[in-house]
Image (cartoon, rainbow, N blue to C red; front, side):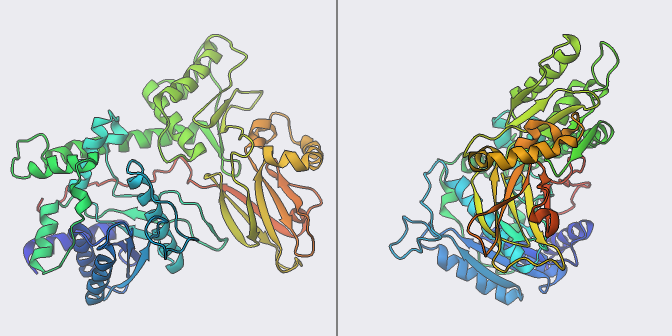
Length: 509
């Protein structure tokens, strides 16, 4: 093995050891390009083939994609790595397409987004099937430089200009799984400090065949235009588009982001209470007369803290807009400076509720509209589903309790449930009045954002209401035979879900 490859293998091995993944099962996302093929070679020599499983998602968009996916499988076989192909089907592709799994081919504007979403879903499925907790991708230094430039053009701030982290949570994917199932995998990008020329060198030196995707040369896509600018600057170290120069700025932004994240975590730990089962966060409203709360002392940190809370509550794929964060800040400031009695507001699908008695500021999911959240039916017992893209809801049969085989459950939003179950919900609401009026669970907006669960016994045609307003219904199956769990999909916002590089790589760029 030549010195460049040896150094790259040690680099990958060091990252996997740092993340405690060296002895864990790993899924390699292999497209067939030089970067992912080099990734497979490096990981195989860093940790061995037995802990690796590879997957290739064939988008089925190009005529040669099936051949390329098969070629990847052949090379994985020579490395001793198990491999599978997941083929995507599109209704416009062929008359022989399986219409049950096919979806319409997206427009050119949405093509990258739709391809990415379906690819995530397939890879997530492979992880669940094989009990794998980490997905390794071939994103390299050039990709990081592209990301930096792309976000710079969109006038992103520190968080956007920090680029892709070394490790992050897997993108949200709708799914149903066993209650014994694991949480989603993490994404690891071990090649972020290795440049594309080094990966080409590894492939050529070790006679690894790769395939170039012709669509990557299509400059109608902005990313491809940026990629070309960075590639053209490879031999001009003084160029502002040189990848190493861009990465130096990117890593400086990462250090700033890391400092901000630690500061926000400290503020949240001291001033906020996370109600994971409600998907809501309560922030202290205590402040000296005529003063703002301590957590608002630094405007920049306050803005980032609110952004973290809003992102946790609404579970959107993108961060909240600055205008929405400013709306929340202004509402809070008016409460203290103008003695405003109407200090509630909604933005970014999140509602800010004013303090009441001992209760602080509450940020929860905005009251859903009718038919906004799809009905989910025929869910088996001992399974969990992702509801409203933010809450994991599970129903489990208690040990020793008899529930007829074939019993299923369904989940619906409160506004939709009111159309058929208004009387039952009114009785349930009356029974919950014993809870202190100022408690967060009693607020009608918080209750409206909670799921309503119905159980349909195999011996009955009509489902029974068992859970609503954040609590089991008294006297129902949830009281006697079932355990219902509701928890936020995202980890506690005080935790940092992203890991950045803490050292400078010695791998040749």
